[in-house]
Image (cartoon, rainbow, N blue to C red):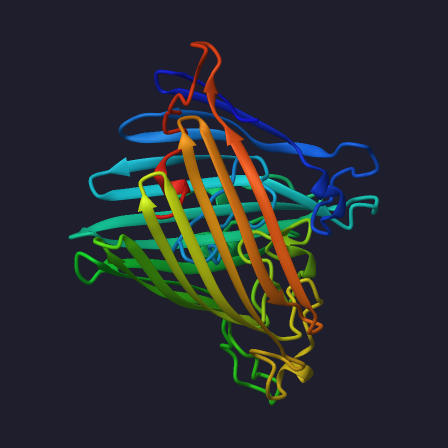
Amino acid sequence: MRIAAVRGPVVAVAAPAFDNRLKDDPEYTGYTPRVISGRMQEAYLHLGGSQGDVHWGRYARQWGPALFDGLLISPTAYSTETIGATLRVWRLRLESFTGRLSDSDSLAAVPVQRWLIAHRLAADLGRGVWLALVETGVYGGRGAGFDPVLSAPFNLALLSDFNDSPGGTGFNGFLGADLSVPLSRSVRVEAGGFLDDIQVDDDTLTDRRPASYGLSVSATRSFARAPLLISLGYTRVSALAYRNSFNPELRWAQRDVGLGRNFSDYDQVLLRAEWRPAQTWSTVLDLSYIRQGAGDFRQIFPPDSVLAQPGQGFLIRPVHRMPGVRITVVGAPRPGVEIGAELGATRDGAGRSELVAGVRLNLRADLLRQRWGAALPALLPSTDRGWP
């Protein structure tokens, strides 16, 4: 259930969900020994204006190209509370938010407190071209509290970490960029990437640490007469991405679920065809091929003696190959009623074939006016759903 209250520039949203699939989800860390499981999917207060917005609460975000989950900010992890703001000036948008992450070594007398930061400066370069510069990171330490220096949107957190952060506070930062360019009225190319770490020193034989990074590239072609939308994309995340060699607890994750991607040391090719026979109906076909190496950002960072060996940067053996296919049909037979069905087949890392099937029904109504199908207002800035 999703409840929204709107009054002028103020929006309040609550979306409680009762979902017993959470009891079997290994990535869900809530309380499951009960008959009914559930959580707050969304719960936030948003104050918007023409020049900016302020928000406080939890909701899913997607930064970057839309074909894949965002490399640094995506809806992969269960949403968590953050506070932030967006500033819009001319063709620029500056977005920033910060929040508390789950503690590491929480059973210790003084647990490792962890905090996240995220800043994005997006620029409209004209003719439909968008460029965004992104900085994210996680910082913390035993008893470490909120650090406004690292969260300030006009500071470069990497420099502030060296010059201004108090002793005992570690920082694992990421720098990234996203680009969206229309090549014609029907073709758009998008690309994104981030850099986690590169080898700078070259003093010893072990100074051969491979770079840790992630990248995505995709192209989309629309056929208006069909109407059909075809997208082809490639993405990869290196083996050492999202973790930190000095502070293992500063991995880019919430309760060990990735804040961007939930896996590292893998790549994927994805072909998607979306057909809209009517305005309220769509059919999507996905063909995917994934190669997954043995690297995992939840593992302890390997020593330099291991990293100096070949084959440690990407697709560490053994490598599993997982093809997959999925078809999804979504439609609205009448206002306020949406139905959907999904059928897919894939091969897991152990080589076993799996079949996935599901159906869903969504109902929407304006309870105050007692009518079905009432259109909900735009509850979030479009910048939190991908591109501005």
